Image 1 (cartoon, rainbow over the protein chains, first blue to last red):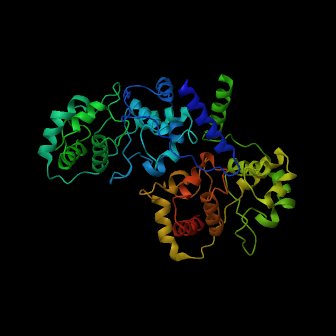
Image 2: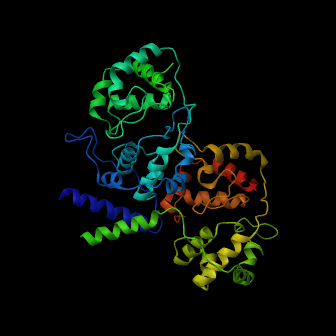
Image 3: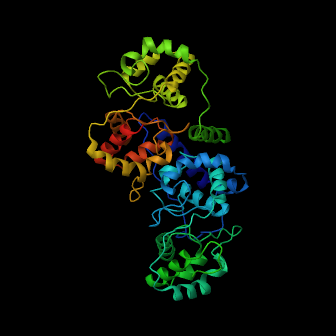
Length: 237
Length: 206
C-alpha cells in the first residue's frame, strides 16, 4: 500500500516536472539498497524483471547507444583511467541489472543518471542497448595497474574471485556476476573499494564479505591482475 | 487507478523514443513558403543573411525531423520565442513539413570563426567532454563532423554566438524542449569558457 502510494507520488511529481513551464532535469532517486535491513541482492525490480523477459534488438540498440557513446565511446571501451567503464561483451543480465539499478536509484550515479534515466530512454531501448553491448568484441588496451604486485594479485584472485567471476574473468550471466576481464584497472579499484566500504549500495553481500578485509594494496593487486587477464587466456601474464 | 498509471507510463514512453519518423514534404512548396516567411532572417537557402545575424540560426542541411520538431514546438509553445511564435501561427502542418524538407535539402555553407584562439580547446571539448563532471563528448550524439543523425541535430557551421546562446538557455532551463532534458543536464555542467570554445569550434565545422 505504502509502496503504491510512493510510486504514484513519484510519478505525479515527475510528471509535474516534465509538464511545467520551464522543466529542469530530475535528480537521481534514492531507493533502498544494501544498507536496508530487508535487502535482497537477487530481487528484481519491476523494470528489471520486465527487461529480463524482453527481446533486445542489437541493431536498434546500436542507434539507441548513440546517447551513451559520448562517454562510453562507440566501441564501448570507456576511458583507460577508469572514469567510464568498458562495457563491450558484458552479460546482458548484468547490464540490465546495473542500468535498472542506476535508473531506479539503487546504484548511486548522479553523473550517469541524466543520460540513462527513464525520462531519457524507454525500457525497450535499454533492452536493445544491452543486446548491442553484449555482442561487441573486447576492445583491448584497457587501463592496467602498476604491475608491481601481480603474484599477490593472482593469489588473491585464485583464492577469492574465481568461484564467482571465473578463471578467465568471464563472470556468470545466469547469476548476474559480471565479466571482469578487460576492465580498466582504476575502475576495478574504485568499484571494489566502494563494494568493500558500503558505498556501492547494489553490491552483493557475499562479495562484500569476501573483500571486507582487503587493504588498499590488496585491492590494487587483485585489480591489476584482473586488468591483465588476456582475451583468450586463462590467466594474466 | 490502473488507467491513470497506464496514462503516465504512456506519456513517459512517448517522450523518450529515440529516432524520429521520416518527414514527408514537398521542397518546392517549402521554398515558396520560405520566400515569403523565412528569407528575411534565415536567408534564401537557410544559410543566414548578410551581414550575418547570429540571433537567427542557419537552417540549411539540418535534419528535416529536427526542423519539423522545432517548428511544432514553437507552435505548441514548448519552445518559446516571440518572433518564431508569430511566424508559425499561420503555418499549417503541411507547410511545416514542406519547409523542413526544403531547408534539409539546402547545402550548408561554411560558418564564421571570430575567435580562432578558442578552436583548440573547443575541439578538445567537443571530442572529449568532461569526464570529471560527466559531460559527454559532443561527438557521441552530434558525430565527429557535427553532422548529427535523425535523432540529434546537425550543428556544423552554425553561428557561434547562436550555439553559445542556446547552451546558456539549456543551462538555465529557459529552453526545455530537448528530448529527455539531456542538453540541459550537460549544459549545467559546462563553464562559460567551455561553451564559448565549443561554439567557436562548431562554427568551424564543415
